[in-house]
Image 1 (cartoon, chains in turn green, blue):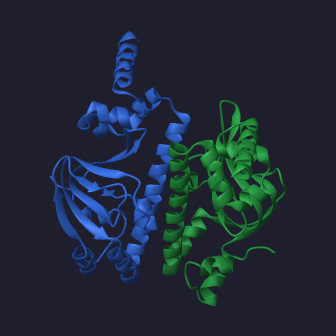
Image 2 (cartoon, helix red, strand yellow; image 1 turned 180 degrees about the horizontal axis):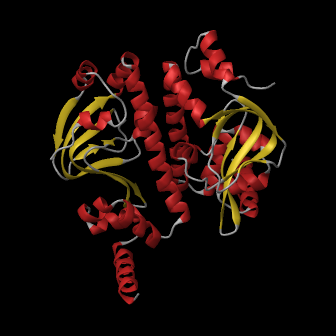
Image 3 (tube, one colour; image 1 turned 90 degrees about the vertical axis):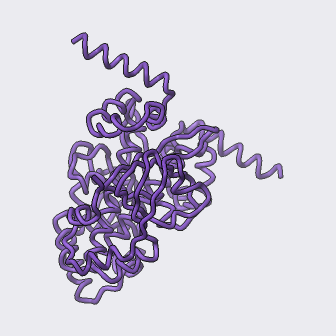
Amino acid sequence: MSATLEQHLQRYVILSSEELHHFTEKLQRRTYAKGEHFLTEGEPSRYVAFIREGILRYYFIKDGEERTGQFFFEGTWVADYFSFLTKRPSEMYIDVIEDADLLLLSYENMQTLYAEIPKIERFGRLIAEQIFIGSHLRTTSFLRESPQERYLRLINERPKVIERIPQYLIASYLGIKPESLSRIRKRIWRDKHRS
Amino acid sequence: MSATLEQHLQRYVILSSEELHHFTEKLQRRTYAKGEHFLTEGEPSRYVAFIREGILRYYFIKDGEERTGQFFFEGTWVADYFSFLTKRPSEMYIDVIEDADLLLLSYENMQTLYAEIPKIERFGRLIAEQIFIGSHLRTTSFLRESPQERYLRLINERPKVIERIPQYLIASYLGIKPESLSRIRKRIWRDKHRS
């Protein structure tokens, strides 16, 4: 079942049916097949997209290798929010891991909504706070935790990632080689069955 | 000369003198001497503070060493915004590098202001976006740049840090030992005078 924008918005603000209509009018629906890119390095991130269905991922290239920054599932927004806000060219890629059905909101339409509906301003503040919180957690995890600790946190807090994302991309997300992830998984399994 | 909150707010929103009065009523003024702590690990960050005068820094302890996260100067806000938003105990310290004169806003008062003045909601959104942008720049700098590149960026983009912060703290901010910073400075000086 696809995620609905209405339910998502209602978690943050109560909109009248007129306001909701006004919001949805500003969106463009677009579908992407697995493997397609939603965003490519060098172009500005002109849209934020609400994910009705599918999984996306952002990554960047360092030393010739893909480094996975984050995965995005149904019911959340995806964008290079830094590029979107600053209008600088994106330094990352966003590709599609599972066929995606998206609702796109342009920067200009977002500003219009902020100006016209004060409750959307609140929604925007709460989303910006959430994005900051996510970015902060990701950074401190790299600064403070070992790859094994990051993997255990993923199992506990984001089982969706474990269930639906291929191992080699999970390894890339943890900042390690696939072989290292295999070793970590074996070690965890052994520790679990020893105790 | 001390920074004024009025000027700061006006960069984001136009408030009536009544709204401005209502905002400033919610603030508590507090001064801190150099070396004092504004926040200690383990306590929640209950306030955001506008810096009228002074410099603050946040840091955390890793492997027994202080790692400097950021410096905050007059005319900006300081807090562990993650702890402030999530109400989790802070994982960092904020100390005073130069005697500070602060205006404190509590979480509860901030929510009241958001509810009462829609323009403050906009201000809150813009500040949350700025904090995200700052956090993102800091993270990508660590992921993508060498210590020397980080130092050159600091010289170009934040000369205040170079002018007013002691060398050993700049080294900590760059994630290197003071000796390494000395070597980088010598190298830069040499390259400059060779060409």
